Length: 302
Length: 264
Image 1 (cartoon, helix red, strand yellow):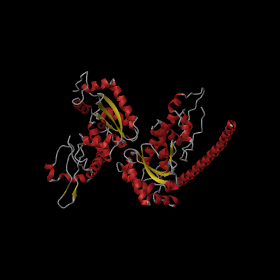
Image 2 (cartoon, helix red, strand yellow):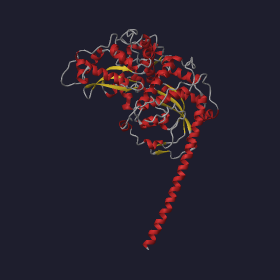
Image 3 (cartoon, helix red, strand yellow):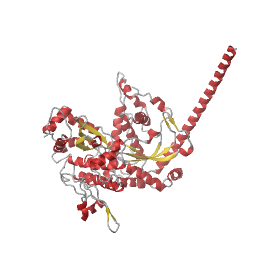
Image 4 (tube, chains in turn cyan, red):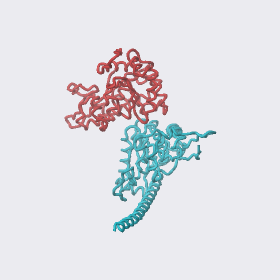
C-alpha cells in the first residue's frame, strides 16, 4: 500500500472547491470491505501526528495549568489522533487531509464513525493555536474593524462570545467564524450573494462539530468540554471563559486566520466566476450549432 | 433519605428559605419542596428555593476509595447544587411551569424532543438525585432474587448484561448518561444511552439504574480514564438494592406477562 509521507496537521483550514461532488458517492462501508492488503511487508503508517502546542506546557500558568495540559493534550488530544489513525488506516480516508476527512464523515449530519475523532483532533490543534502566553487584550486592524461592524463593539462581541460558550449545554465548543456566504450545500445556493453577507459570526457547537461543516472559516475557538477546565476551575465554567478571553486569546492568530479566510473566499469567488463564464461560452457555442441545425431542416422541408 | 435545601458548600440565596412563618400554608404535593416565592411587606423580594437540593443517602466520604469525598463535594455541592439554583431561577420567571412535580416538569419541558430552556437543568436535577440513589457504600456485586432472574431473562446472563452496560458507557461520545430501564412498551429490561440531560422518563420508561457519564462525574478521581470509572461503578458502587426496590414498584405499573417473576 502506498505509504504517503505522514502529513502534519495542515494549517489551511478549508477544503478545496469541488470536493463535495466527488464525495457524494463515497460509500464508507463498502470501501472498508473492499480493502485488499498487498502481499509482502505492509507498513502501516500513522497518517496524523500529534503536534505539541506552540508553547511549553507550563506557559499558560496560572490561567491554564500544566497539569491540565498534560491531560488535555497528552491524553485526550493524543487519544483522538491515535484512534483516528486506527480508524482510517487502509481505507479511502487514509489519503485525505484532516479537513476533508471531517467533511466526508460529517455526512450532512449523519455522522460516520471517524468523524468524532477527526473533528476533535482538528479542534484541539486549533484551540492550542488560539491561545498564547501573555494573551488577551484587544484585537486590532481589520479584525477589530470587522468586530465593530458586525457586533457593534468589542465589548458586545466579548459578551456574546462568553454567553455562547456558557450556554453550550453539555460538551462542545464556541467559535468566532468568518462567514464568506459561499452557501453551497448540495442543491441550495444563495440567491442574492453580496459583500454585506460576508461577516463574522459566533456559533456554538455540540460535541465534536465545528464550523467547517457549514463552510465557515473558523477564527477562534474555546473548548467547553468539561475536561478542558475541570482541573483548574471545577464547575466554574464562566470563570474559565473570562480568563480565556482576558488572558489567553491570541489575537494575532485570529487576525492571520481572518486574512487567510478572506483571501480564500476571494479566490473561490474568482474561480466560480471563471467557471460561470466558461459555461456561458459553451452554451452560446451550443446555440450556434442548434441554429444551424434548424436552418437545414427548414431548407429540407422546402 | 432526607432532603435539605442547602448545605455549607452550596452558597446561594436558597439559604434564606428556612426561616419563615408561611410554611404551614404551603401545598406539599411536590416531593422536593414547594415553597412559594413571596414579597415581604416592604416589597423586598425574598426568593425561596422552589426545589431543594436532596442530600445523597450516605455521607460524602462513604464511597471512598471508589468515589472520593472531594469528588462528591464538587459533584453534589457545586454541579448538582448549581442545577437546582439555576432551575429555581428559571422557574421564577415562568409561571406556567410553576407548581409541577419534577416528573411532570421534565416531560413538559422535553416538549417531545424539542426541549424548552428549562429542560436541561430540570432533568439534571432529577438525574443527579437518581444517580446518588443508584449507588451505595459497599455496592456492586450482583442483583438478587427476582431482579437477577429478570436480567437473566432479558440479557441471557448477568455477565452479558454487565458487558453490554460497560460497552454502552464506553461508546457514548460527549456528555450523557447510561441507564438500565424497564421498557414499558416492550415490557423488558433494556440499556439506554442518552445525551446531555435526557433521561428515560421522557419516553415513559422506568429507570432502574443511572450512571453519570458527564466528565465532571469522574474527572477528579479518574481523569480521562472513563473505562476505569465505569468498571468501578459496576463492581463497587452500583446499588442493586435500589434497583430492586424500583423494579418492585415498576411491577405495579407494568404487567410483564409470563413467566410471572416476583422481584422480591
